[in-house]
Length: 278
Image (cartoon, rainbow, N blue to C red):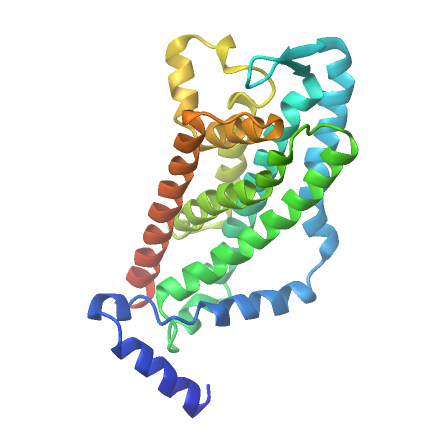
């Protein structure tokens, strides 16, 4: 790092309260820049698999099974096709999967094997810089999936409102919540075997968060349990935007992911501080 950059960093740190200066150097863009340089040399075939998975589900379940199911009630109570019903849920699931796998698998390798974060935190970077930079890269992957999948939905005629454009920033918000929590959980993992726990959590969440059928099929106590899961909030908000129907619950869904993101980023920051800045 050049003398000028070091001097600017020191001035930024002096301008912050003591507790914040120990956590954030205001240079998360350095982590983000490194992430984009890595992406340029990455295997894009592996990255693209996260896009094709929800498309295959849509074709198999929405179009194939949808021919047998017929129409179902939409968020506003009006009947919609089964494909229109599950398509927003699959977009929310795609944002979740992309963010979690990016913030878990990649972060675990950097944390436990390459010791990348340990090296970063020996520079002027703070733990919050690292957390924000890594979570941003997970969001970028979720953004790519959201744009591509929404384009598929538009081509298939499965969105009926201009409100559906807001599904892209909502997908990023969903990815932010899952990525921050995923990175925080990864900081506690010790071995590759523990990574197997991730699909064991994501698959049931996908199946039982009212993605493929209405939540009303469950008994009321089970419904409350489902409503506590983050994916359900993402699915419901996506469905509302897909038909342009918003109500008070829409704000609750946004607030849920906002709080989840703040708590996740805070947890990651303090975990990195505890691991490497003793």
